[in-house]
Each structure stands twice: as C-alpha cells, then as structure tokens.
Image (cartoon, rainbow, N blue to C red; front, side, top):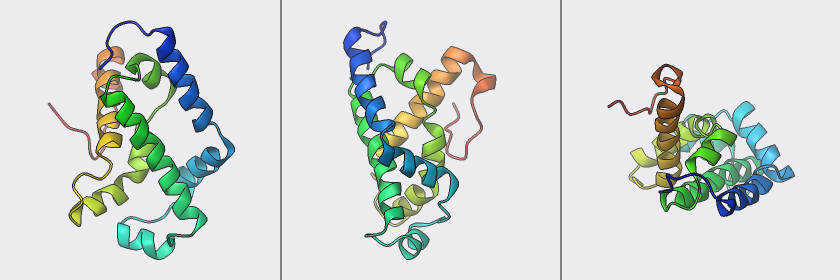
Length: 144
C-alpha cells in the first residue's frame, strides 16, 4: 500500500475515479442509495428492486465503484491521503452494509471484501490523521 507522499500518477488515477464518481449516472445512484433505498436485507432488496429495475442498477453501480476502488487501494494503486481526503467512503458502506451483511449471512462471505477493506482503512486513516475522537461509531467498526 502506498504510504509515501502522493505522486502525480496518484493524483491522475484519483481524478479518473473522480470523473466516474461525478458522472450523472453515479450521482443519481449515490442520491438514491443515500436518500431512498429502504431495504434492510437481501430478500427485501430483491423484492423491492428486481434485477432489471433502475434501483437495482443504482445500488450495484455504487457498490461496484467502491469494490473496484477498494481493489485498487488494497493493491497500493490509490494513495490513502488523496482518496480519504476527497471522499467519505463510510457513508456509502454504511448504506450498503445491511444488504452486504445479509448476503454474507446466506453464505457469500467474500461479497464486498474490497469495499469493506476500503471502509476499514478509511476509519484507520481518520484515527491516524485526525484523532480517535473523530472516528465515527459505526455498527461494523472493528475495535482494537
């Protein structure tokens, strides 16, 4: 994982991610996820938002973006100081968490593992750079 000072290529990759994050489709999906999604389990999600529905696409668009970003981050390709200073990822992980937790309870233990890795790393980064009192108390937060 990158720990040195961010380089120009770090900024370049972040700007590419930012372009996707700010696209019209992603904006609509983020707004839906944070303000309109009502499901608390995968069963309820599938009932309310069938596979071909716009709402289903909204959820998975945000989920896949952060799963991909988490994969890049886990492999040291996205600098934490840039990434976590630009976005508060845990607001999106918190919104997805009930569905992720429900899927895992049904046996898919690896779903969202990179998204989760990213969210946990962000909490560690907040604690390290801003102090432990700033770290939000979230239902999935690991305690040392």
